[in-house]
Image (cartoon, rainbow, N blue to C red):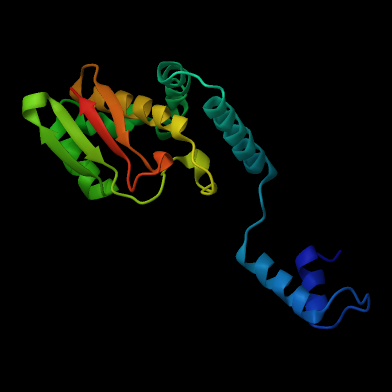
Length: 185
C-alpha cells in the first residue's frame, strides 16, 4: 500500500499519471508534510475545547472573583502532571535555594521584598508557557492566568511550608511582555 507521503512525492516527481494539479503544488505539499508531524486529533480536539471554554468564560461577563474561583481550581491538573510535591521536595523549608533553582533552571527573575513578605517573580519569557496553549498563539485568554495563580500558590506553599497567596500582576495572556507574579508569604 502506498502512503500519502509516498504518493505525493511520486506525484511531485512526475511519476503519477493522474494529472492532478501542478508539479509545484505537489512539491510544496510534500515539503510541508516532511516538516510537520502528523496532527494528533485528540490533542487538536482538547485544544479547541479548552479555547472555546476560555473564550466563553471571557464573554460571559463573570466577575474577576468568579473567574478566579472557576479557573484557579484547574491548576491541580498541571500540578499533578508535573508531580510538584516531588519536584520541590529538595527545597521544602529552603526558599532561597528554591529561588536559586527557579533562576538557574527555569530562567526566572525573582526578587525578595522581605519588608512586605513578598516575592516578585518574573517568568522572563516573551511567550505564554501554559502547556494547554503551546500551539495557540493567535488569541489571548486572560482568565487562564488564574490557573497560573493556583499552580504557583501550591508550589510556593510546599516550599514555604505554609499557605501563600499569589496574584498575577502581568501576563502574556493579558498583553504584557512577560508573566509576573506577586507571591505573598
